[in-house]
Length: 346
Image 1 (cartoon, rainbow, N blue to C red):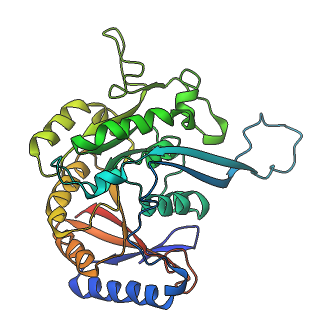
Image 2 (cartoon, rainbow, N blue to C red):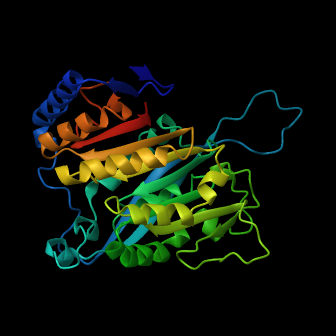
């Protein structure tokens, strides 16, 4: 068990079957105790509307970056600014029940888990706990993004070199459209050639926003991509090895930045037993791309047997840490249906 300097959460190691069952009993027990405050549903935001608007408001401390005053005796306190993300999404609720396209259909609608995760990151110091602050040199690959681009739109503001969203082929067109409709929320996009953004503490002001998959600032033969910020939406089917090889061939820039931290993000992607083995294989492969890497897996707690199977099958491959509230009675996780696991290679 370990803590970080925020003293609000702990990492609790799960390294045996006994600890898996102990963890599950504790979490489902807390859900029962807090049943009146927890929504009793599958987690879809809205399965009636084709268009949704999601707003995320939060307050962020910003370090004083003014020129030092030699006569100043005291350091100025960090200022606090109010920030807002306004994300407009189109979904396909009618496709949720369709089985004609050969793809998983859960990704066609927007789920609550993403917004639990983003609110925890931004409003409850989760970003600091994960060391995902803007000066930490973090890059992210998201697995099973679905049509909901919200993680990429928000977190592209805090990643250093790239954010890559991935999913099955049938999802990508709608995901790309949602990304394009919300690029204005990404400061790197709005400040393509002048990225010295004080509020994000980004020091590498020469980076150029590029996206081959969205046809934005396509690189020419005379340019190098070392200083680019890459925002991509790519095909990656865990059950199809060919798509993984294609993914790797399209993302040389991942290894080009191997001094920076790599996080694999997966939000609410494990909901049946058939997904577990291919997911684990994909995560293991991706974590091997860089020495300093981890996977953050956010799940909504539904069928406890699925969570048990997932954790059990992870044991031979990963160190498993669950993020828990230091105050288990009144914490963010204790009063929710959600859990966050950190996976690192053994």
